[in-house]
Length: 165
Image (cartoon, rainbow, N blue to C red; front, side):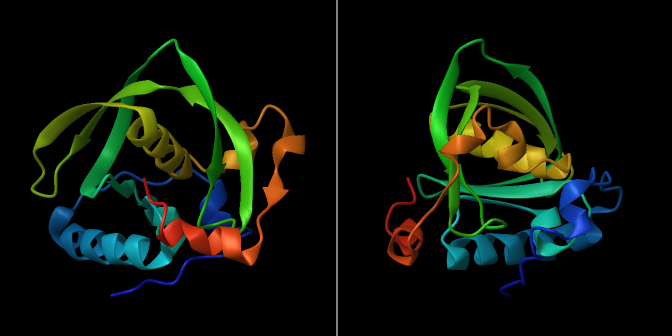
């Protein structure tokens, strides 16, 4: 089911999310988040973006979908890479954010099993972006130069459906 996205000024987007202690409802939420992410043309979606202050996010990079429950970033590479980021919570806005090019993340699977992933390039960036949502941080908060923030045309914004990788 497609879930409504909250507006960028919603308080849920600006505070840390709570850990998930009961996994019984998470499968349904995760499936709906993946469907919403796909339908919105995104490569990631965190629970605060749908109004839920819980620590779960999903990604869909390179045709592979992942669900991350109670994620914690354990390690960041020293190599920092600038890249233009956008966000479904801030439609049509894009700006340059510098982030490490690799991360290692520990999290729980849908079944509650501890997992670990080391990610690079776009997946690493999406993980960091979505993890920030769980901490109440939006991408403009990470920008070194706010002057790089720009508003995309409707056509540029709509192109995210064609350019998901």
